[in-house]
Structure formats: structure tokens, C-alpha cells
Amino acid sequence: MSSQIVASVLGADYANLADELAGLVEAGVDAVQWDIMDGHFVPNLTFGADVVASARRVVGVPFEAHLMVEAPERWVASFVEAGCATVIVHAEADRHLHRTLSLIRDLGAHAGVALNPSSPLEAVTGVVDLVDLLVVMTVNPGFGGQSYLTSMEHKVAAARALFDAGGHDIPIEVDGGIKASTIGGAYRAGARRFIAGSAILGHPDGKAAAVAELRAALP
Image 1: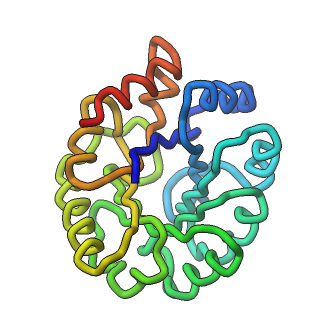
Image 2: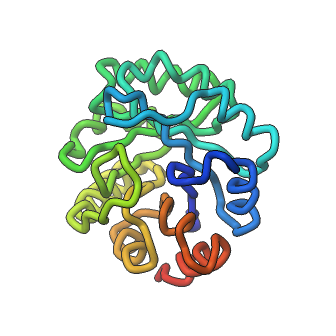
């Protein structure tokens, strides 16, 4: 698949969220990711499905919900109903991963699985047939603005080799610390979807310049 830039709104100005989202769309991002945190799986709280649903009415690009929550199966339906085309759950948070991925698909969304930096790739080998997207965390989840973990490129490469050997056309997304100086390494390892938050929202020349810079840095 062609490379895609996905904007995280974790560090957005929430008092002007509609304007922030409009700016991301104008900048040319391919999708928007909502980092959903419950204060338990990660030490932070963010959005509910009602916020996502409100934004869905005014934004045209695809949404994905990254559920950094305990018992994610209880959250899936509300975010699909809110307009998320993809729902991502953490393998570490789900005792019944197979069932939850099946639920996401049954509800008409794409099913994604995320792996924390310390989690082995083997955590998803038993559910590959139900995975539409693998997210390799290149930071520990919970906060924006963290430094990219170059060591995770080995996991990306191993996942790409595993999927290709099995004939699985599953895209790999990397999440955490993506900016112009790190996106190339993730691409060469096999990633094709790149989550960028602070690199876009905090760019001194604005969102459009940030997205252009990221695309220009791709090999």
C-alpha cells in the first residue's frame, strides 16, 4: 500500500478542536487517530465516544480509535457507532483478543491490534487471520511527545516478514515519536502508516508544512 500520514489529536488545542481538525484535513493528512485512554491501562484520560461522534459530523477523512483501555471489548461498539472506520485494541489489555477482533469486524469496522514496545510479536500470531492493521508502538503509550524507539524497527521488520511469508497483506502502522528524522527508518523496516502528533501539531511553520516535511522524508 502507499504510505499514509495519520494525525493524532492527542496534543491538540481542545478548546478549538474543530479548527484543529479542519487544519489537519487542509494539511493533507490521510486519517485522524483518536487516542482513547481510560486512566487505568495508561495513566491518562482523553476522549469519549461523544466527542468523536461530534467531530465525525464536520470532518471527512477516516477516523481510527486507538483504545488504550482495559477490557476494550466494552468500548468497541460505541466508537464504531461514533464513526471510526478502524478500531485498534492492545493485545496486552484483552484476555479474549480473538473474540474482540471478531466483534470489531462484525460491526463493520477494520480490526487493529497494537503491541507495546515490550510485547513480543508472538502475541498476535494466533489472530493474524482477523487482523486488518498491526500497530507497533514506538514509544510506551500514554503521553505525546516521547522519543522514538529505534529498536522497534526490528519488530516492524519481523512482522512484515511474517505477514509476507503467510500471504497476509496486513499494513503496519507505527505510533510514537514519528517526525522527519525517524519516519524513514520506520518505512525501510516495513511500515506504511505513520502516526504523527506533536510533529504536526507543534510544527513552527504549521500543519501543512509539517505534513509536507514528513512526506518528503519518506524514501
